[in-house]
Amino acid sequence: MNRPATAVEGWHCPAERTLDFLSGKWRPMVIFWLMESPLRFNELQRRLGAITHRTLSKTLKEMEADGLVQRKDYGEIPPRVDYSLTGRGRSLQPVLQAMEEWARSQAERNHGEL
Image 1 (tube, rainbow, N blue to C red):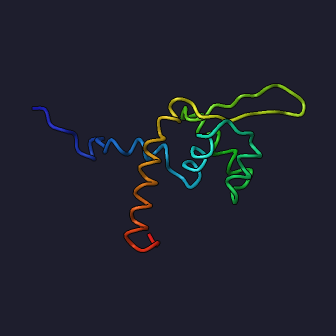
Image 2: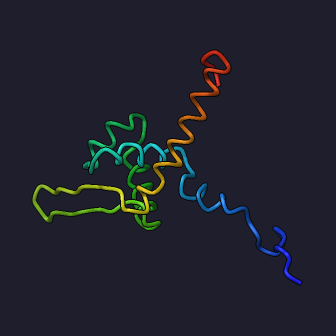
Image 3: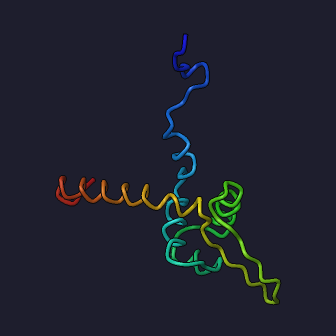
């Protein structure tokens, strides 16, 4: 008999995979800023604001391991490294846009408060 596996047997909601890629405070914002164009580490850190050097470095390494971000080292002195989105990273744009639209509609509905 073909029946879907239960959570105990290992079945998970398909959206969990997407949420794994967007989990954490900084990942969606990194994707947002890299949608425009590739950025150097310090410029990305400036745009993100309150993120520490260590946290951004860790986040970018994790995102690179997940295939969302690519790192291009130009091998120059002083070091020049650009970060950009991969095709997989860019494919999350509609998801982030839908989240933005939902947040705006909720803010309008609640008179500016979520």
